[in-house]
Image (cartoon, rainbow, N blue to C red; front, side):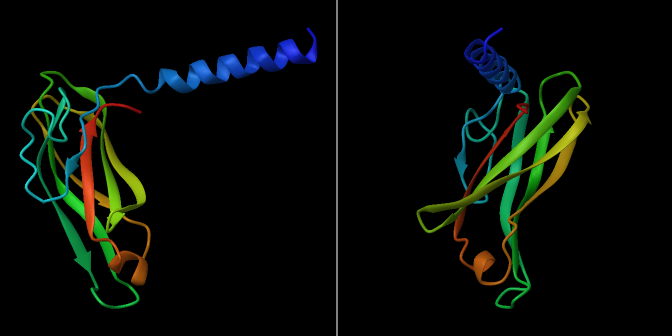
Length: 140
């Protein structure tokens, strides 16, 4: 096999494997008003419903200030989920600062899960976070 054929074949296999993990059930992002009601496409998927969420600050105003989004999600699929996640996009005003997630394995049917999605910045970086968007799903 020549070098060009090898590289083309390898790139195709890597691309297919990368897309294979993206076929889960994801909700649309909802605004970070802290009143996530989980109805329809408001951050919830068909399998995972956001029950509530809020922006939480600790050590506010200091060099150790942190920010996270804490809340609860429920498995509404009717069967055990081997994997579920909550993804949060953190914003500085209208600018996306970064996004992070929390996940759980083997979430039983009807079970709720208390999640906490941490923003990794501290101090001034955490203080700059003004808003967030959130969604729940079963995608990897």
